[in-house]
Image 1 (cartoon, protein in one colour):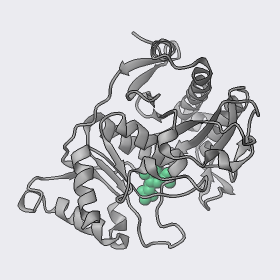
Image 2 (image 1 turned 90 degrees about the horizontal axis):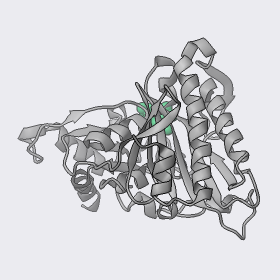
Image 3 (image 1 turned 90 degrees about the vertical axis):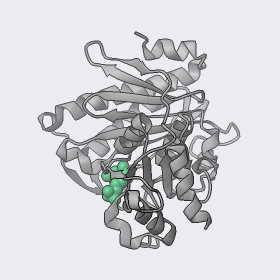
Image 4 (image 1 turned 60 degrees about the horizontal axis):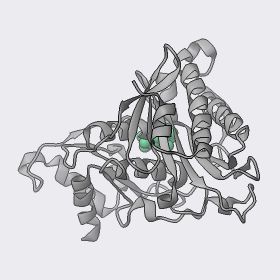
Length: 323
Ligand code: FDP
């Protein structure tokens, strides 16, 4: 049985980065406990407030955000913080070597129904010449991430992490409160017969996705010559975990619903970390036109189309864009 601490030492992760990872993981253990308490600890339901993206904040969004901010601000290795629930960058420690972005509680609509939810995080090196409160700290591409991961609060709490070499999965052993290595090299199968998309948006999609999904729906009598099944958790963290575990393709494409929000998922703290985990497990992650990890972050809350999962299936989907 290998604990997270030992894995990071064996993988020669530098002590400063280890410290940042432990701050995040400790916060997530706290969040996991509160999620598990549910209605008993008064964390369910909504607040009266909206975040910068105009979404109503759930109580657990606010609580998880505060827990992460408190742990990270107390870590001298963290220079700046960006969160889905914060309008702008949060300065932590001017001398910190790392900057951290996170979605404190992904899948908010699942909170009150006891569905899958999670915390997604990304870590970059800080830019030395820039102050901690300068949003340009995050103007990097996903390729520059030094670590990324998520904690899924499901039937068990799992940490899926990459520090660059591969994608590892740890399960929280609640008897002694530590994450224990349960898969040391996640591998996404290259082929799949399972897709994941919100079909309710189909009339708003652009042509490449209309045609691609239509061909999947035709099954064995269509051009793809095999029957596809569909799954939708309405929490990216749950859908991506399934794809990382048994293959599949997860899509949240650009659509025509609201010209001000052409895509839904955020690049910095949703798409990028998931893309890094996916690529390091042998999968692919694309906007349809380019790898997600090559898109430069211009704005902390920038949105991006997401197509990720089994490599051959993502390539098939990209074919419809190329045409
Ligand atoms: P949510 O708004 O509930 O936090 O982060 C956005 C996200 O969830 C993803 O986790 C999820 O994949 C998607 O939005 C769900 O979107 P739909 O409302 O279209 O189902």
